[in-house]
Image (cartoon, rainbow, N blue to C red; front, top):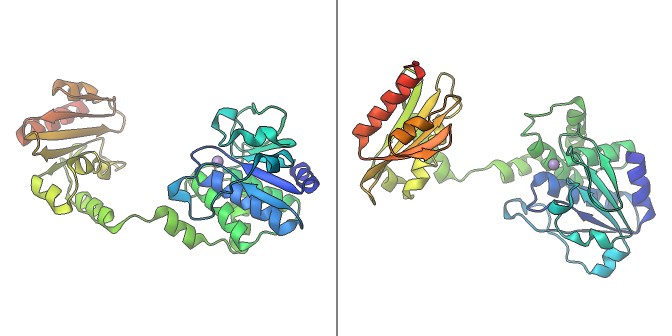
Length: 312
Ligand SMILES: [Mn+2]
């Protein structure tokens, strides 16, 4: 398959690369990485990248603005998507030929396209590295950085679909100078204020020793961080998530605009919605909430959660 893709690329002097809308880092990384792979290994080729942009991920390279005439004389390559409804910029239809390179387990509905699929690849970027390996194409630093960014994000920072192939590709990219710390800084840095606020609530929450964790937040704490009540109420409930021995967690925040206490409730597995409803609230089975009169009622809610865990 990768020899075939390479042969197609060789045939065209102009190539336009497409990918899905609202791009994630794998869509952008495979698009930008493939562009540089082609430019760095062939002479006299024009390569363009098109599509909408995601402000959060615009640090690698910007998209090209091109006329229809260019596309009419080009090979179109669509990466990280095989479904028409999700492709950004439908002008691949104008191209002389269309190929799709994707790792999703979808059938391709792009008319007259040749579909190259590897569902074992953790990322479309991994397929681009495999394309390079199979054809002995050289990978430069810029190309390696783009491809690494999609591999690290689509694999959940190497948490999902951990195959030997994924690590072989990552290893090659690091050898070729992929700027890993630059990518991590761009993708995973938080602003200091949010980090400190999270740390404050993380160290503050209490547990009752019976599987329930909770926070009682006063007006002075909202003032301290100069945020709105939702930032604390909805935004901080997560600091109690994914902790061994904590089955249910609740965040109670005073809201001075209504002189009430906002309760946000979460549960790992046991349905807690009936308790939210008992207090006039609603939501989902494992994520719900209720507006309470005061912190005294909040304590009753915690008692109810405790009883629920004890099977009463
Ligand atoms: Mn992907």
